[in-house]
Length: 314
Ligand SMILES: Cc1cc2nc3c(=O)[nH]c(=O)nc-3n(C[C@H](O)[C@H](O)[C@H](O)COP(=O)(O)O)c2cc1C
Image (cartoon, rainbow, N blue to C red; front, side, top):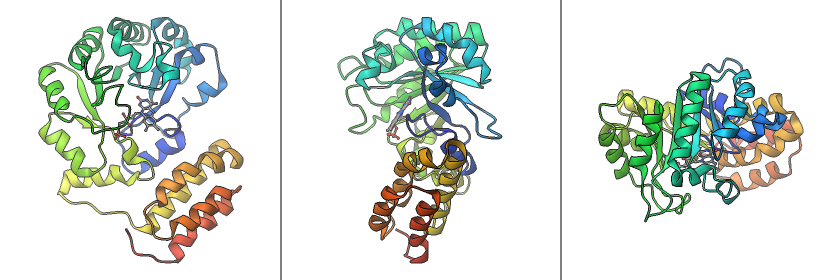
């Protein structure tokens, strides 16, 4: 799956991930309060790309109250499943009691799960961390509370809130969680430092998890979904060529232009385009041109230079 990534997993990127073989993707985190208040900006995050079958919406909220109030607006988008963010470490979110702050108040998380189950009847999943910090590791108890409240999928990001995105994810926690939940009817997903097909295969084969979420490993590299599937099926995988990277970047840009207009797309796509080309020889000059580009044509012309130069793949 493509993990929820604020500022990244909009419908254009979810469509690209789907075309590259992702089984499902999660939206960026969406404020339940914003949705309840009818914010257009919040609602736009929930739009499907044409043909998107499964829409997994991630909500963040400090308690069940805004979640209950946002349900009429949420249901207008006909989601397939709803995920609750219990992992966001950003101070602006945490200080309201949402994101990883819910790890300190598991009863509030459980109440959110129960309200969503009761009011929507949809599958509910919970994405959480090891705990607030290394002295308050609580992921097993947290998983129990989510499961008892009715969650049908759990995703563990194997870091604490205090670790943010630094250090290495503690893979051994996946095995502890899998053993702890054995025999229970719940899907277990892993998150944290999953960058290669080998990482995914290792976690599924050796740590007992049902699936993995690619997060930073999919930015500029949606090919990871095809590579991971090929590796699981055949034991080897094809590395994308420079042409494939550039073609995919141009297609991604085109989708963004179609969905958001040229102005917004050229600005918002810079981070994606930089990531697509980052390991290609000659990329630095092209990056400068992309930063200055104001139109789709200018971006495309800059990107095409990397193909025309026929560098060998990195
Ligand atoms: C830029 C960025 C935005 C993220 N946004 C979200 C989010 O909206 N919701 C969420 O649950 N996790 C979010 N995450 C966490 C990722 O989904 C993932 O759990 C984390 O990056 C660990 O995976 P990785 O080490 O493979 O990147 C975000 C991470 C990054 C780097």
